[in-house]
Image 1 (cartoon, rainbow, N blue to C red):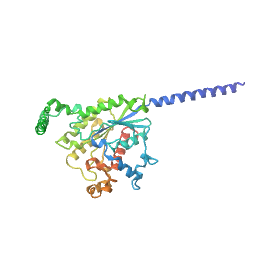
Image 2: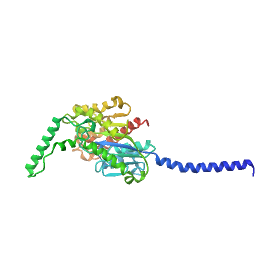
Image 3: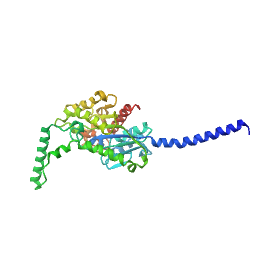
Image 4: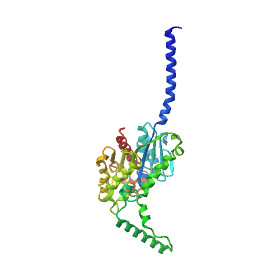
Amino acid sequence: MTHTWRASIVRRFVGLIIMVVLACIAPTRAAEEPVQVFILAGQSNMEGKAPNDLFNAQAAAPETASFFEHLRRDGQWIQRDDVFIKFLDRHGPLTLGYGSPGRTGMELEFGFVMGDHLDAPVLLIKPAWGGHSLYKNFRPPSAGLPAEATLQKDLEDAQKRVKNDNEKNKKQKPLPTMDEIKAAYGQSYRNMMAEVKDTLDHRDELFPQLKGRPVKFAGFVWFQGWNDQYGGAEKEYASNMEHFIRDVRKDLNAPNLPFVIDMMGQNGSNEAKGPMKEIQDAQASMEKVPDFVGNVKAVRTDVLVDKAAEELYPHWKENFEKWKVTGGDRGYHYLGSAIWYTRIGRASAEAMLELMGRK
C-alpha cells in the first residue's frame, strides 16, 4: 500500500466523519433556534370580523380568487406547519378561522407573511376583547389612575345603575365600591400579560411541534381605537399609547421590541373627523417620539379599504345576496371585509419586517 493511497483513504475517512458530525449538529442547531413570538392585541377588530363563509365564497369567485390563492392549496385553506396561534381558548397551526366565532381577522395574512419570511417557527398570541378602550380597559400601569373626580363620577354612575336594577327587578345586589371602580382600570392590560405568560408557560402542551425550543419576543401589533372616541378619552390617547408601549416592553423585558400600530381606518375612502381623527393623529405621532424612531411604525388602514364592500354597504339590505359575497359586518368592523382584513394583515407584516430589518 503506497503512502499516497493510504493518505487518500485517511482523507476520505476524515471527510466521512465530518459529514456525520455535521449531520448530527445541524438538526440540533435548528431545534435550538428561538420561536419568534408576536403578540397581536386590541379590541374587536383584532379579534377579526370577516366571516369564514365570505372567505370561502371569494376564494372561489373568479374575480377575487387570485387574491386568496396564496392561502390555499388543492382547493383547501392551508394549515401552516411553521406558524402557530393561540387566541384565548383556541390554539393550533395557523389557518382560516382564528377570529371571532366563524370569522377571521388580520392574523391570517400576518402569520403567512411572517412564516414565509422567517426561518424560525412563528407563534402568534392574540389577546383581544371587543369593546375595550385604551383609556380604561387596556390602561397601562405607568399611566396611573384618572383624576379623583373622574373616579367619583364612575362610582356614582355605577351605583345608580345597580340601584335602578335592584328596584326594577327586586334584587339586593351590593353597590359597587371605589376599589372595584379602580380595579377596572388596566384589567385588560393585566389579562393580556397573563395570557402571554400562560401561553408560554404551557407552550409544550399547546404546541407539541415546538416542544423544547426557546422563545423570543419578536414583535407586537396593536389594533384598537374605536372605544376611545367617547367621553374625551381621545384627548389622552397619545399619552396612554406612549405609556402602553413603554410598559409592554418593560413587562416583557424586551427593550425596543418592534411595535406596529394599525391605525383606526373605518372611515375608508372618506375623511376622518372629530375623535377618530384625533386618535389617528395620536397613533401616527408614536413614530416621532424620539426613542420610538425606528422601532415603532404606524400603519394606515383606511387606504387599504375594500372599495367594492364600501360602495355596496349603504344598500346592503336591498342587495343581501350580493352583500353576503362582498362584506359581512358593520362599518366599525371594517365592513367584515375579508379583503380589507387581509390587506391590513399584509401591511402590518411588512411594517414589522421593516422594523426587524428583514425587508
